[in-house]
Image (cartoon, rainbow, N blue to C red):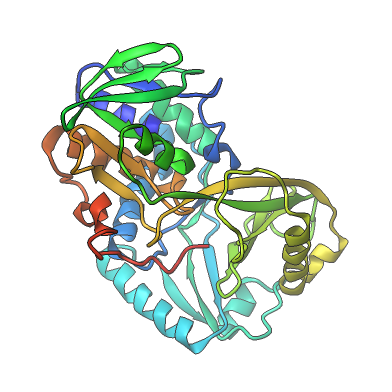
Length: 370
């Protein structure tokens, strides 16, 4: 989010653009610990529009930034096991088509069986599939935006930790870091799982909490084609897709409490493994090669905050994507540059994604989060 926003601001000639990163390198937080999924299949128009812009950039990234995003359109397949979910997803497909994503389609069980013959379809009633959904590399996208931002004059400082935010009346005045103080009237909070902590430094309450999500990668599974779709059992959030010579498998823990730990929960790992073996029986012969945990940055309605805080002029927020942030990074940088420089986004209407919607009871629920 920070690299993309820095790029689009620098592209507009916004003056001095400074990106602060507390780690030694960019992308060492949630960016470097996610499964890399990109998709059009969301349940709200604003998320679909963010995907339409972002995936267009990601799919042409090498042409735009001279570095490949390693975009692999293997498709997303959602497996639906309840009639209510079938009804909801069919309505979502109609909405996605109307907004300009005609590639998404509903599949009957027999069609799914032909598409993924290795998957156990017990209890599956139908599903949705989009062949243009798939995977991309978060690190490459981050570096591409960062390099392009630098070329256009942006400055990136690593190992720089924000310690405080000074205000003058009801507006931002400066950022205090371990490397010194930076006078500024504009701050963009792209701190992801730690966005609430940055907000607290400025006296702004932000309802974003970090929630651990973990996954594992197996050793080589020769039986699984490398173009096998990303497959999601919607009712449990189990997902799996090819990763190198093996398979990446993850699942959301409905009982996970907020916290910023990367420690692995072995008990839940076993639950994930058990469910994965049920849906993808060939994993019985695979070995777990690596386990990882990352952090979702969760808001109460699973939508990001893309706005200036009304209570503090010059304090902008681009965080809270609830598990689908990386794929929306291109659109985020674009809309934030317009909000900052023009007062509102012209490319995509994100006015409903303001901070104040939570206190005012205007939440917009995204149900298609895994």
